[in-house]
Image 1 (cartoon, helix red, strand yellow):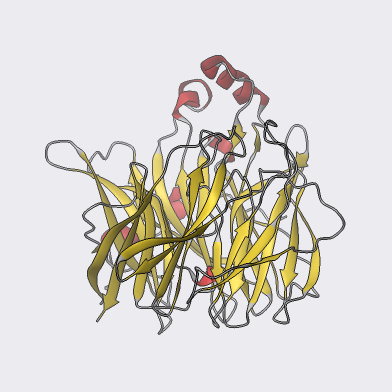
Image 2 (image 1 turned 90 degrees about the horizontal axis):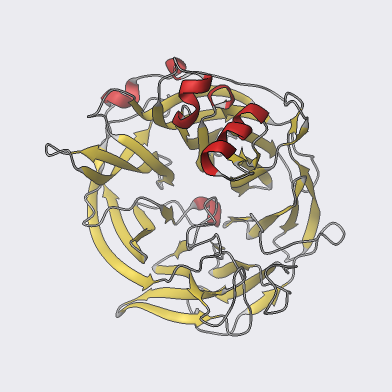
Length: 460
């Protein structure tokens, strides 16, 4: 395992000043409600599959998967999938599940030939059971006729894994090659993966074991969740965050005093691994991209994009510390919040800097939220992000911004994306879901339980 601990002082400041200019014109062509949802109270929601996406574009067709709470079903498995399409008359429901129940949203993918793919995880448990076994499936539609009957595909796995409704699954599609990979967690030890080739055969599968936490007081596997995963020319790239019970006994005991809970989860180490060929080469040793282990901070992955030359671009949010613990454990430390960016090539981190950084004491600094990559047809790479700013009256205002990542690693100037209803949490029609690079930025987000779509044109 490679350790890359760092402090914010290592980050460049170009992103704060917009040192490198970007030339792109932003035009908002549509802002629309797709559907409204009711909170299922099962620990999930329409955007819980953070590392994947629930919106895809194929040509002029734009499709969205949604979740509907089942009125008479008990949590945890009390929702069903829905499939929407954007039409000349607005967003229309094409199909929805009528027989199954599930807990989590269902990620989408699309092949270049118009094959639409929906990853579902219906429960096998009885209706009155709180939890139980589940059966991963891929539903195959036609993106041009999504109302037509779909075909159910059962992935094959290495043995008979014990899947549940807590799938923490990742679904990635290589659109041009018409291939896909599904990864689904099993307990606290590993994720199962299975690969489907362009002949429609599940021709490779296996287990990805988590990083080993040898440096903990009680060494253990570091379950790695909410990953961003890309499949490109049979290479697979995986970047996720630690998600284990608090391993620091002193912090755990103090948190219990504060919250009354005996459990608390750690989200403060970002890990990356890859294989150049999922069909024949094992995953490489884990690389630790970022850590906030020393100050009980917080990290969450946002996105990943692998370029044709194998350079991997990684995006994540980071908070320096848990302020509840500061006075007792690290009183001299200062808080900061950042949207961070790194490049990785052959397992080595070549660039690492903040796109947006807010330090404690600077009340006027924009506070970064989540971001996603967007790839243009000419290969230019942008980040669409959320930021919170304070106006003259001291009120918090949400904004969306666009910024270019230049070929030399420098960060361009911020470009406003003036949505009438800014999006804080959102998906994009991503190349990781098989969508083609585009000068149209398709966004799917939520505003007060309204799932909304925005179409943004990026031009010269």
